[in-house]
Image 1 (cartoon, rainbow, N blue to C red):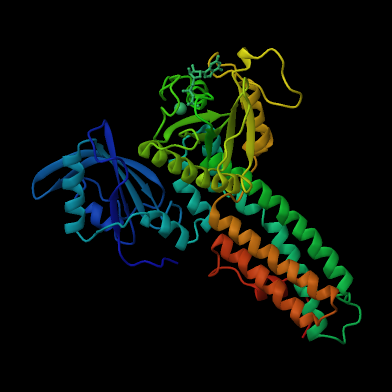
Image 2: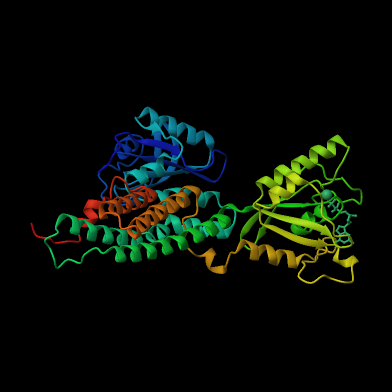
Length: 445
Ligand SMILES: Nc1nc2c(ncn2[C@@H]2O[C@H](COP(=O)(O)OP(=O)(O)O)[C@@H](O)[C@H]2O)c(=O)[nH]1
Ligand SMILES: [Mg+2]
């Protein structure tokens, strides 16, 4: 079953001094290569096991090691695989890898163990992508979502949809290929419209869940903007509870964008404090202001700070245009200085760190519910683009059915939807439409 004829080796742990290090060796010659330098012959083993022994080469002991032996196909890569646990010295690791290469292994490329796992069908593409995400996650919530994908829970969510598309397609195929079988339900256009619409609804849900998952996984950029001296830098400091940005009563103090990170209920917010917007003759300040505008362009969410004692907005045509395209939260700062609060306005005092109303609004704005932290979701750009593509094919099928076009045409849109679903999971080589359709009908000859 194995696709690869070469055996690869790599250090699986960081190349620094530590208690232990792990070297992975995978491929058809794994046991042969390793047994030639190990005190125990692992070639005849039939079961997964752990072995303690000595590794030596040309009369020199390299290290004492514990070796976990995995026998194909029951391993991460689906191949014969060893995880060699040695003492955590970069020198030993280097020496051992060199000897393994001398003995016939090849240095693995980045991600090659995972790609072998995928190509040997130990996991689909969504699972393979999640390995990287699990390692990269900086919050428990992001890690949890990635683990759901890694264990296949996300991929499973496509099964019912895929089967339904195949159901509709088989119905159409049967009607095209075997018109004489009267007892088989006629694939009426109404039924196609009805079923496809239901699938589109399910896809909509998956897409919304995926977008939320993406926020949890990747975080969002929040730009704090406003006129000079309204308290933007004070707000950044209050948000992260640290005196990171310089706060003064001199307008025009902040000139470069100041960044800080905040974990807001599991979502990483990258907060960007910007230079206040106003007309200025000062060249350095002017550069700061154009940087503010660039920052707003990149932001996913904008917090527009106004001074509650004189809540006037800045005039900047370019920036105002950009703001029309962004979610903006308007907030009145320095609430401690005003007695009267306008209705329906958000009041905070950055100076006294009284900013809870803003935090609540930000959470609302993200639209993330408790359930999103536990819902498996297709949450990277590739996966979301693929879901949207599937939805587009189905919408096309619905449109064509409504216009009473031929079932051939509907069939081709649905087939494209099905293929895209397989592409999303990266299962092009293993799954095919014909197999799925014709396995469900027993039509005789
Ligand atoms: N009373 C009061 N003063 C504030 C508040 N927030 C900021 N300030 C003051 O307003 C001035 C400008 O603050 P700063 O954060 O530098 O404003 P920025 O120019 O918008 O970044 C400073 O003197 C702050 O102490 C607030 O909530 N209440
Ligand atoms: Mg400032």
